[in-house]
Image 1 (cartoon, rainbow, N blue to C red):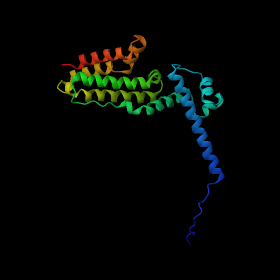
Image 2 (cartoon, rainbow, N blue to C red; image 1 turned 60 degrees about the vertical axis):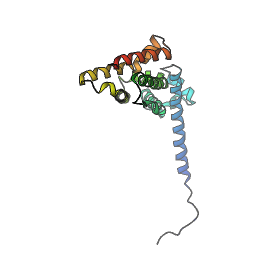
Image 3 (tube, rainbow, N blue to C red; image 1 turned 120 degrees about the vertical axis):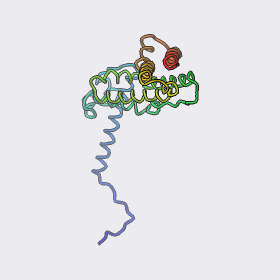
Image 4 (tube, rainbow, N blue to C red; image 1 turned 180 degrees about the vertical axis):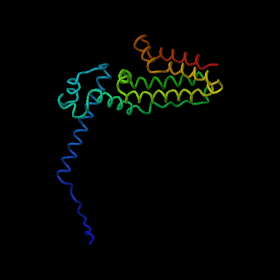
Amino acid sequence: MPLPETSTPIAPSQTDGRVDGRHARRQRNRDAVVEALLGFYREGVLQPSTDQIAERAGISARSLFRYFDDVDDLCRVAISHQIERIGSRFFVDIDPGLELPDRVASFVQQRLDLYEAMGWVGVVARSREWFQPLVADELARARALFREQLRSAFAAELEPLDEAERARRVAGSDVFCSFEAYRLLLDDQRLDREQITAVLTDGLVRQLGT
């Protein structure tokens, strides 16, 4: 016999409520730890202690690793969180009808927007790729995407070339526009954005021009 219909909703059990509450609290604390670490990165503090992270997150140092396996796991999650946050900046929008100097200028500005948004998190990611395979995989995918963007944005200059010459120019352009080159110009040579733009634009035009 089917159960009679009722207009009275069945209330969740108190146990379900407690479980949901614990889950929500755990997620809030986990997010707070990630945001605390990202905050240190934004300030240029790349290796904060677990005590510093826990204090900023508002939890005890002892409980920090209830939410993460270890420091490497926490760093990986923080890097992934930042990538997701600025995900739209990973894609470039270049009008193929523009002349080469204008396409280069647009390309450089969009790359610099991305690199500035990544900030010190990009530095941390590259320092950890050598011993964290998941971070290395993320960076490998990003680098492959960046090279494909170069090929697409500058197809008019690259497609007429033979395979070897095309590969050489893509490789050179990829180095010019890399995050590593950007940080070298910013940190080592102390150039500002306008100066970095001029260096990258000039280099790309020379690399891609026929």
